[in-house]
Length: 165
Image (cartoon, rainbow, N blue to C red):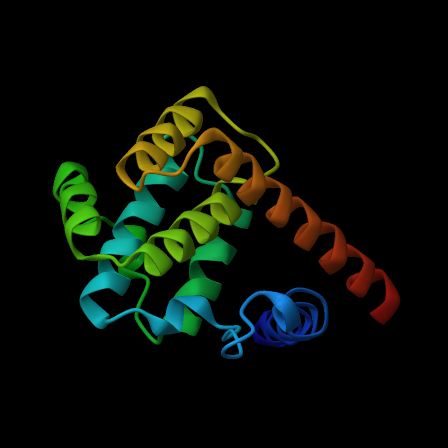
């Protein structure tokens, strides 16, 4: 499993470095491990929201667990046995008050990746994505762009996986 996660990290690094990162910010290079940029408090808020979003459709898939584990490795935190320890409303409020605009985009993008891990976009997940977009002031175009980015990344991961095999 760890070898598989290492491959995913390597593929993500190569993809982001070669394809996406070169032209995003001309003033500085964008870092590829986005979640590692968050403070410990924000990492735990993210984890709680990620777990909640993964369970909201009543199905907590193995692919969602793998994404959470991968994110926890990236953030250097424990997965808390996939249990939330902060109420959902408190998580939303704390994220809204504490995240910078850049951090909001990071959290939003990574959560889109998590809910798309099982290739099912349930109505309750849609509702939560909408709520998060409202809280972070991300318009419909921004939401569509986040989903498009994650779809593109999934395709690249698949291509890389097929190439490696």
